[in-house]
Length: 517
Image 1 (cartoon, rainbow, N blue to C red):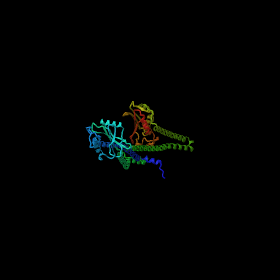
Image 2 (cartoon, helix red, strand yellow; image 1 turned 90 degrees about the horizontal axis):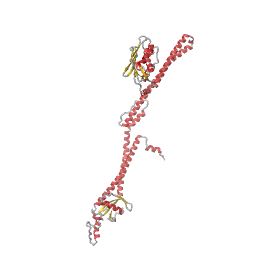
Image 3 (cartoon, rainbow, N blue to C red; image 1 turned 180 degrees about the vertical axis):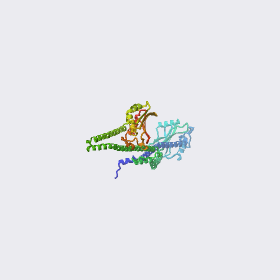
Image 4 (spheres, rainbow, N blue to C red; image 1 turned 135 degrees about the vertical axis):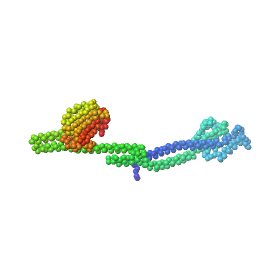
């Protein structure tokens, strides 16, 4: 015997599929609505059927001649004589003969006459149906209401046998002089049978409607949820190698379109993140390779000099002196490289600078003796606009100027070289220009000039070549000030570096955004 698990039943009645959840819940709502309509229909139709039957009984009573229920009294209150000499019998006989007519009564109909004294008389033809009777006080109350022309609805009463009947009341007799009450009742079984038949028809139609809804609504749901299925398929097919695929943004459904937009936006952000990560990884790999290369050269030189000294050169004072001087220079080169790497790492991790009010013209004038010393026989020109100030880090800006100045010295002739530093204001910004008349830079190298460890061929052949970190450090410091640095150069026409710095202090939020770049 197969056992049905509770989990299987639960899964059937509460499926995880959105399609079946919508289907079951929609049909459940329809069934509840049909049930509510059926209950309302039962009470409304019951009242309608009973009221309609009561109106029919009232119309039937009104069609009866009232002298049928006068019991020997004519309209002039005079006794009538009969052939047998009994006035009462002769007056009563015509009415009884007329109301005993077989065409007067219907099956299941009971008529009771209640006189002014509360005496009841069943005037129905023998129909094996006992009429329900009320107390004398209740009949008196009904009589008063009828005399006052108050509307009396039907009543549902049970007779002595417990059979439920619908009862209506009318006055018996001519208008103005009627004292008796006519009570007409009929059993309600036929009415209830009619009501139940109508409800059965409604229930059958409801079941057919639910079945039709189940048959038609399921394909409609499949068609409606098809765009959602496309989103699911696209999400399943998405990985790190297919982030460029996009879902159609307009599929005819507002909610699905919003989901598609959100999904496409997520894919775009992921694509940018992976691309940024890829570029960062590539830069890191290149950085490690270049740093290893730059460190390997001085270390190899030091290692070579040590081997020479170990082979006996240490006993020769001249060779020993040259080896020690060379190793000292290479160690300085290593120290400079490590210091530059630490500066870049610090700028990458925490670009926020301790800014203070600084006068740029005074800062550059303060650096003039040092610049003249570095330039040697080269001409140094300072073209400074006075009173140019802002929120800057003075030491970092000095490092920027020195890096650019060193770069100009490296690429200009030691005798005819001219290096100029210009300070001005440009669109509410401080502008610093460092220009020289050196060899210049080819256009192919300009886009990579600020990359770490990047050096063009001419820079590699100079006597005191650096590691290629000076311009990268310069750019990081300028960007930490929310500034920009650009370069303009042509071979044989010299080079000009242009720095633009805002005069207002950086917003901490902007600095945080910069740190996340």
